[in-house]
Image (cartoon, rainbow, N blue to C red; front, side, top):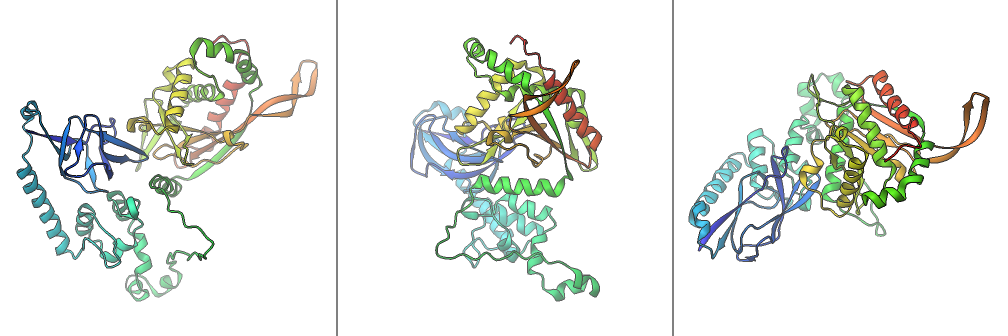
Length: 439
């Protein structure tokens, strides 16, 4: 017999931790080689951790909704093989002692601060959440008021840290007027706006649908972005007739040679990467009062999922890829995104995002910046429209393929001139497309 420690695997250079969302195996269950034993979540991506050995699950060290660091042991599997013993795993008894010790320490802290494991309303709080609450002086009433994004609306580590970071503003609902009067002048008290959630009436014909975990994360991320960045939009119309004609001419031969369908998206992504090279101050992030100028050009590509949510896989070093390379990357990431097969590191590290609102027929949109980036581009629908065509012999009206591109940018660090020049450069690049260009 031997014991094998299941550790949280490395999931990308920038991923340091993950949240356990569901145990697929319980203590005493048999486990086969490469069989998934636990589901984990990092930001927007759900993943499974497969077993590296065959045996019996004898210990689970973290509860659902616990946040675990990469490399930490999350479970112990007993195997029939003796060769695993060279890894010098911790014995079951030692694991039990350590787990019991940690549990007692957490409970002691929680008890000292009067943070119960289960509130009077039946809401469960994990040891980690109770520990953070005790250390930060967060009361049970405040914990009750936090909207949890974990399974069954449980409050996660990220929820309570975000609550603390936001200045614990939601507790304003529970502060009595006389307590406010102690710290504010009387006139200020009269003007103080206490945020109260508007009650929603529900009748017997209404259907109540629980938001998905990803939906909650996206909602939180979008609200946070609007509160962080001063959003400004610029719009420009682009004549893409040459691109449409070129694609129609080469798409069959392109597929025969490359085995890939050529769409407009990789052409637009290539133009965006080229523009970023010329305007590198679009490819930045903000950290307090500092600007971080990104060396790599990693383009995020918003992709729709089967459940209606969006995910943003990233094309790394997009400026170093030719059109064929970008086409392969776009098609591969889009296909695997729809199937839920993206790896955690494939949605990390983006420096600029492009979203195609035209795929739904929208002419243009005003997308929300994908933090910590400072800009995002929306591609509108390509349409046939009557347009004025200038020639040496005079102007005339003709049918052209046109589209709008919308640029949302953070006005704290990107002014109107830079935001406008950037999309103008994209327009000029697309309109200069050679209809006879080889592929």
